[in-house]
Image 1 (tube, rainbow, N blue to C red):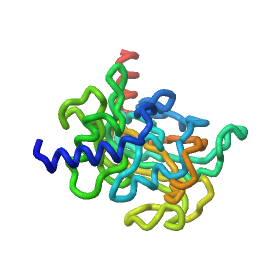
Image 2 (cartoon, helix red, strand yellow):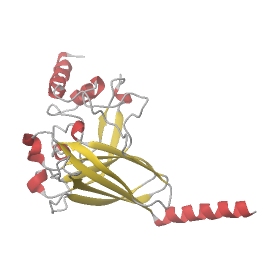
Image 3 (tube, rainbow, N blue to C red):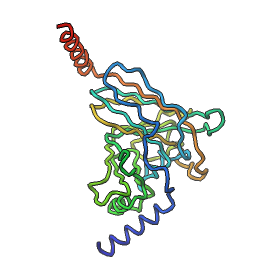
Image 4 (tube, rainbow, N blue to C red):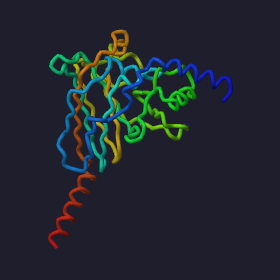
Length: 254
């Protein structure tokens, strides 16, 4: 490693040194499961995000701290239309209910147990972020593009988890999430946002956080959020599901 690369790693390490040592990316209690046809919408209630700005902070050039978001996962057995809805909740007053929620969907999953969990401050994450051109990064999370993150077990960039951007939705407007280009806001800052996406079969991550960019000055108190996922097969996929069910039924009758 040359002197310039060493300085980049040191700069990135310093930028990330203030991140918490806990709250690695985990889907515990936030797995919507596998959709294979005919499932009802699934809601995961009373989750928390740390602060009101985590998602919006991932829209700028220095990325965002993934500890300020919550990761959810789901799998599709067929191509489908997927609708995600996020709404703020106060959880009986135990959590702040002033969240303006936003989320992004990515193909790919973080490392799952028993493997070591991914986080922004892992040495391989720090090294990877330092290798990128531009300003030092605050974290690994990118709200509107692909990004990578690793665990403490990672030794090369090949060990990084990859998140391939599929789409996003944000509560409100540029008045709260800032002027970064390409953000799809619903223009109504009411603590509720929903978005629909056509996705191929595969494994997916949803990262949910706050859409109030300037909330970085108001601390990291937990906000409550409910997230609902509903899946409708595309016509071709639905026909295939019905055809497969019919073939199985005929075989059983025979």
